[in-house]
Length: 398
Image 1: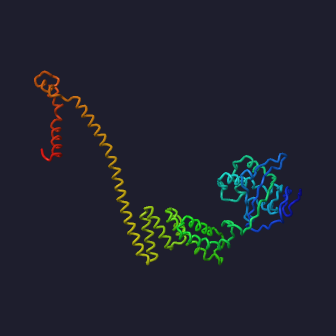
Image 2 (image 1 turned 135 degrees about the horizontal axis):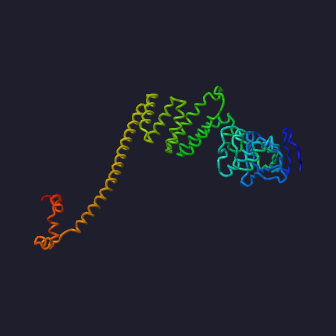
Image 3 (image 1 turned 60 degrees about the vertical axis):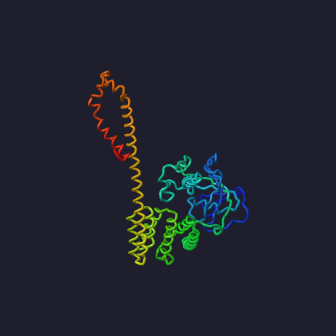
């Protein structure tokens, strides 16, 4: 075993536990380092705080990409492939470890590693929040202290041996990769693979995040790259029927480029699809005002819009009438049931011919009294009218 201070990095000690293979690798910017690590407290028990092997996958960082634990890059770039080493790091290097550990734990659980963080620096997040949600990490936040890292360097990737994501690229690299992403998206559109094409256009749009002086020669024509990408992305969203996505992106584009005819046209098509007639007519009119050669196309689209709105009107009307008819049928059923109940009650008091004859002869006074009661015989004329009308309807004559 060897133990020594790392030259140029005070507050760090290294002890090699297992020698690596071959010479010390070269670590240019963008190199991917794959490793396992353990984090231990510098106490008698050497309490283990984290162990990447429990996550069943190694950890990765990229050289020169501002990983929060800057000292880790220093430690790993001092190792050979396959080497296992123990590093003692003073508290000046471990202040941000609680936030780093929290992010890695959340990522291992399938959660957003930036969950709950404000848009500020790592130290700002450290002091803004009183708890990480993990007691052992909260203790490290309250009392910063030296930590021990046991690391095993598994592999060192060539920066040019894999497709790097856009956040890993330098500004000039982003400018070079945008045209290729654009062409790839166009090829996918021709194959009808709109979802994949939209992803390529979306990735290429990340060039907008470049924070630099717009006076630089290579950025003078930056909008010329952005506008076609946004429009192509919106066309894919139209094909995928993601109309509100189209409205959002075209509106954002028109806020900066108010004379973009294609943006107005695509937004109008999206408004038509979501039945926003007034907004669609407004955007179609803007297309005709900005480019008079498209007047015939706009008129055709407006005619189609009118036809669509008429069809929707009659469909809605028919649907509403059906709802009203269904509601009207329910009271009718209740009325019929009430009429049946009344008829049954009347049937209970109906008189047989013998009872009528006895009443006329005075043998049954109760029946005679019922027949002579005006209140009971009053409905008779209306009943006769109803019967005569029913016969007329069925036979055609009285």
